[in-house]
Structures are given as structure tokens and as C-alpha cells.
Length: 107
Image (tube, rainbow, N blue to C red; front, top):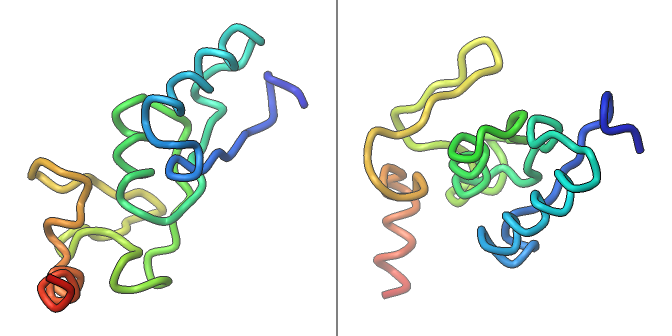
């Protein structure tokens, strides 16, 4: 593994959430890795927001898969391979109408 040219993909959820993800980044930094070389795995809003909030190197996303859980908020468009963040608090689920329908049915 080469810290100057390789990228690492850790799944935020399977890394036990943000706190342990931060611990992983601390260990990587001590080993000479830049956080810009980390691109979270998973196509969900948690990874997108973690990548943006921690200034990571990007986020692996597949917006048309695993609906209604996958993808981005309803009003967020992919343009030239880039995507913005929703303008509301939360992890993006809050602006996914089809997902909220599922949540209501489960409740």
C-alpha cells in the first residue's frame, strides 16, 4: 500500500460509525496517510456526509441502486460526477420521499 498514490475505502457503517471511523483516520495519519486518500465505501447519505464533513477524498456512490435507501436526497443532482449536500440537518434521508413512505409503513 502506497500512501502517496493509493486510495482506501472503509465502510462507515461497518466501521462502527463515526467515532471508530475517526479512530481509523487517526491511525492512518500516524502511518503517513492523508485523509484525502480515503473514499468511504457505500452509496448512502451517511458516507456522503462523513466524506464532506471530514474533507475526505470523495465518496463511492451508486445513486440508482438499493432504492429507496440508496442514492441522494430528492433534489440533489449529479453533475459532472459531483454532487452537493442537502441544505437541511441530518444525513439526507430527510429529503427522500419514497424512503419516508417506507418509514411510515414500518412505524
